[in-house]
Image: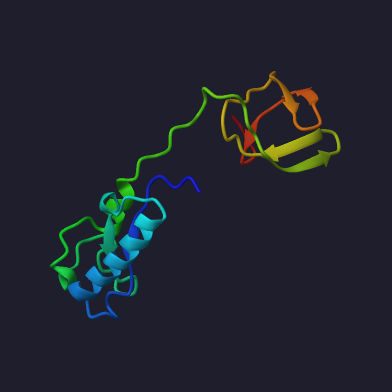
Length: 143
């Protein structure tokens, strides 16, 4: 699926009595599965949390003093943003095409790779239709 970074939040620790033994059981089982499907579990943070009580979500919890790793928020903050592939050819899968009176045909999609700018000549596949980009908007604002 292209998932390069992952965080495992072990939730409902309040129901498990905040026991380290239960956390370790779950961590071992999930690690074995992740290793089977091709991930390196030693590089994935496992964060024990209680969503109900807010334990280890934003601040370290006294209920799990045995856990010395990051909180869920700190783990999320450590995720590196993906690199935009602007050096590749334009790839813009279409989600929809609108025909708006007075405006014309408006294709809608997300730029996966490359760059799209007003004035560019683009070709839509597989039909081979070539046209000029008149404007580029995101959330009803020109970009």
